[in-house]
Image (cartoon, rainbow, N blue to C red; front, side, top):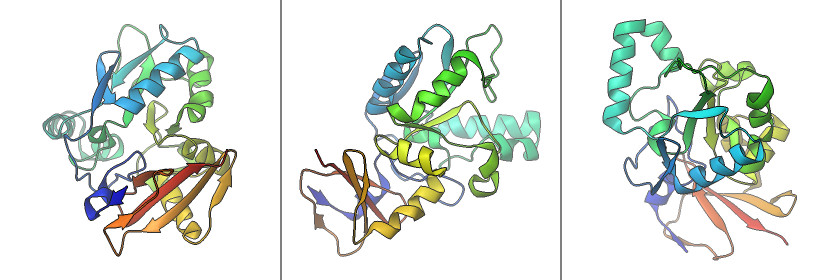
Length: 233
C-alpha cells in the first residue's frame, strides 16, 4: 500500500469539524441504510447494530449522507427559520459537516412526527441499547453533553459517527471525542497501542509517498497524518 498526501484526507477516522473541512466530497462508495445513504462500511455496521439491539422497527435513520448543496440548503434554511445561535449549535457549515463524509448518521425513535434537525432519541429502551452497543459496531456518540467545549457542538444524542473497530471501543473506554482521539494517538508514533486483538499507531504525513505493509488498515486523520491498525491474532 502506497500512501500519498491526498490519503491524509480520506478514511473512517477523518476529523471533520469547524476547524477541519472535508476535502473529498462525493468520492465515498455508498450503500443504502433505510431511506438514507451511508458509506458502505458504515451502512453495513449500522444494519448489524440495529439487528443486534432488535430495534429495526423502533429506530429510524433520519439523516445520512448529504451533498454539499444539501448541507448548504439546510444551513441557510435553519439560519432563516431558527436564527444564527441555534444553527451554529446544531447545524454545521457546508464542507464542515460530518454528513458530507457518509460516515455520520442521525437516528431517531420511530414516531409519527420526526424533527429532521433534532430527532427524538431518549436515553431509555431501544435507544439506550443502541447507544450502549454502538461502539462494538464501530460507532461513537459524536457530540456528548460533557464535551461541548471540545466539539463546539451542542449535545446531540441522535448523532452517531462511524470510526470503525477497534477505535470506537478505545474512545468509549477512555471517554474521548474524535478531536481528543486524534491527538491521543500521536503518542503512539514510535510504539503501538495494544487493545484486545488490535495494535494501533500513528504516522505523521511527511516524507510521502510512503509504503505501508498490507497487513495494516489505514485511515487519514484529515489533519496531519495517518492512523494504522492491525490484528495481532
